[in-house]
Length: 360
Ligand SMILES: Nc1ncnc2c1ncn2[C@@H]1O[C@H](COP(=O)(O)OP(=O)(O)OP(=O)(O)O)[C@@H](O)[C@H]1O
Image (cartoon, rainbow, N blue to C red; front, side, top):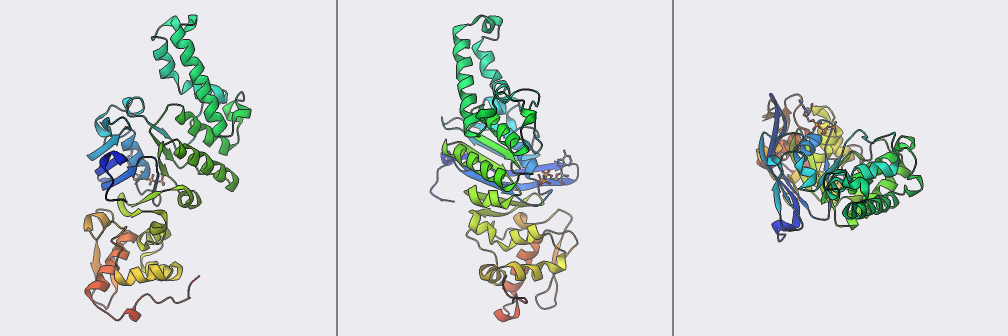
């Protein structure tokens, strides 16, 4: 990320966010920023804490610690962790979709998009029955709402089905309708929780097109996604979580080749981490294993960033370069521990990480 960027270039700043559920640390000291007008992806294995981050941003959870700042285009700033959750969409202009589709399936597509604009229409009616009698401000707001709904139905390639019940749409189209509905609330930050889940490749491509169109309007997108074809194609910036901690943060190309990310995603047995990294990694990855993490895009060597679950420990054994990691520990931490171990024992380069099966 550009060090010259000013604070107002960032729509969202998450600082030292922690969320604990009893003894479970779902998010631990997480900091990242999302640039205005960009697509920022939040990725990580199941249970890494991605949805919990969304729930903190959108007010469903009040974080245990930390600060979430939203900087709007007009210069106003909101501390989301302090804002009542019903004010987050209305005042901070943050909209979200959920992992499970939440449409009004018996209502038409158009009606779904008009319901999303309910607040605007109520305001225009003066919160009275005057709307029923064609109060001019209400008539205008009503016409604008229909126009906005039509606009987003077109963008989502759904305008032909405007009068069909939402429940009749194929799954991928329902996903796009949800996003269109969120866009009708005029968000500055759109948070999408796994929008590509369950989509076929054609539907994924349609989703990518819709999201790129939304980005083109200047709306910033925060995206949780497991589908790497979506993440790598459309994201400007990727933040990777493992056990609620950030293990990598950078552009898609740098994150894709980060050994810690590969290890976290593979989810292999502890003793197999090195073996699998060697087999799947390209020369860059192998080189990083030998020389340590890439400070240019990684989160650095800070133990707090790289720690696994609170109960885990990473020990350096006294047998050459072997690293012992307690069961269930962070795979990213193993990669880091191994890199540190290699650094502290200057061994000949040829002694580690030589591909056994060659590159794939
Ligand atoms: N309300 C809650 N109460 C207790 N534990 C919770 C709660 N919400 C989340 N967790 C726990 O926090 C951790 C992170 O969960 P979260 O759903 O945020 O992960 P995720 O990365 O979104 O996973 P997935 O990719 O499977 O959706 C998990 O261990 C989960 O069980």
